[in-house]
Image (cartoon, rainbow, N blue to C red):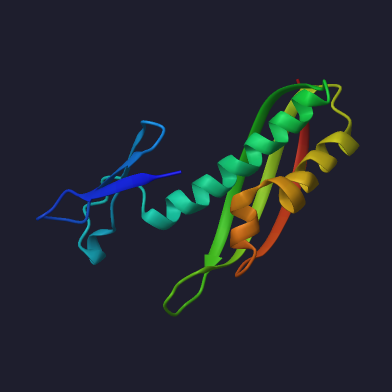
Length: 140
């Protein structure tokens, strides 16, 4: 895996990342840190990646189990340390999984497997953060 990040200076703190898979991602800072609020903060992209990683796992596990999953949303809330480096100290994943006749046990198992076995982002973040989750199942 690889990426290249280029500062778009000299004014502001906008950075453009080009990924090895050929995609582009912008990141910027808050105005009080010299940014212009043109894109997500770098740590927001870390949190977004962690949420995407877990949601991907959950959907894939449910699909492989031949469950009729039709939607998956995960809302993350996080707390960071007050001092540098301001690592994540708490992250909560609130899953809302939609489908037809989804067994609660299958959804709970998919979320648990993501958190304990498959999600690389969680494996890294749990070194500094308490990771919790909740699940809501919605009938399609």
